[in-house]
Length: 178
Image (cartoon, rainbow, N blue to C red; front, side, top):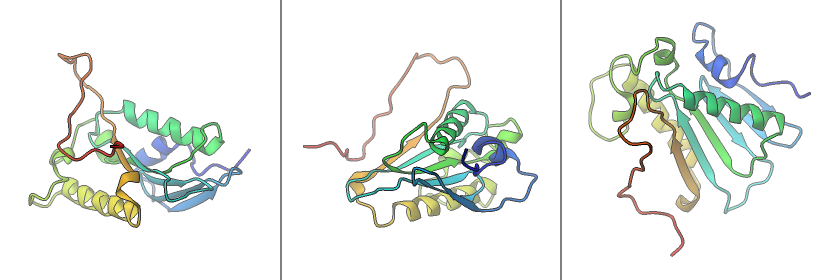
């Protein structure tokens, strides 16, 4: 068995905010490189990448009380580390706001999900988190073709929904083949 990058799991280690964070990395027997650079931020790179490889960000925990996506992401990371889930894209996994999760609340000072635009905001912990995450996303996508970039921001309903499911339509241009 390969030595694990985590003491417990990606999620549990992320939520252990009382312990000092140490950046670390690991290569799996399959040649997958896993780099834990910040608490809740894990970059995973498969052994082989080419110009058409996807660069996928999977973020969750933007709202601290939406825990189901965090568990899903942690399980995906566990399956990648064990070799059960084969990776063919470079991925950045983000559990964004462990402090809010530990406090069983959506956010501490301000809704983090509203802070990723260019509108100015007063300084608080969520503004600092948003600034840090934007920098990480920019760095992750640096030098990649726009058509190979994906960002899946996972959320979940915390109350009964009027609609069983819904889809958000984007005004951004799509990447589909013409």
